[in-house]
Image 1 (tube, helix red, strand yellow):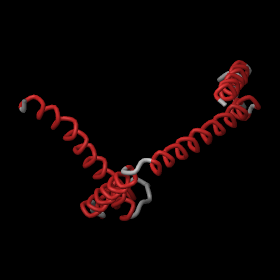
Image 2 (image 1 turned 180 degrees about the vertical axis):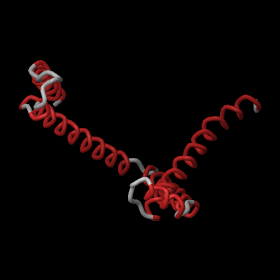
Image 3 (image 1 turned 45 degrees about the vertical axis):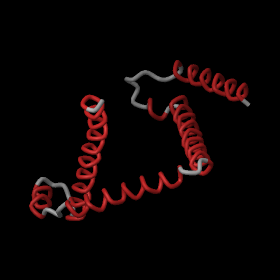
Amino acid sequence: MNKLIKIALIVIGLISAVLWFSLPSAEDPNAISSGAMNFMFIIMYILLAIAVVASVFFGLTKLLSTPGSLKKALFGIGGLAIVVAVSYGLSSNNAPVVEEMSRRGIETTEGTVKNIGMGLNVFFILTVVAVVLMVFPGLKKMFVK
């Protein structure tokens, strides 16, 4: 099986190298619709699909084969859901922002502004948690011996 995968990857690499050298020049206005470019996109989508399926499959098999991993995964998903809920509660549907965006010609709604605020709050909260989880063990090792 391992030899078969290596041979397939070598063949895909050789085909991609041939396609790379047969690409039209950047100045060509029809470069995006060339056959070589389309075939390279097809190869990219196939490899992306294989990577996604393999990562999901092996992740789920590892998750279901280890006894405590499913419990840990559910705790992680629950924690993320709590962070998202708190972030959604902290975000505001700021009417002045909607008015300013419409004045600039960008149509938006208060719900969109609230979702963007929620996404930013999730990012900030998870960043603070990550920094604390990196710094705290270091400080604990430094002061506690």
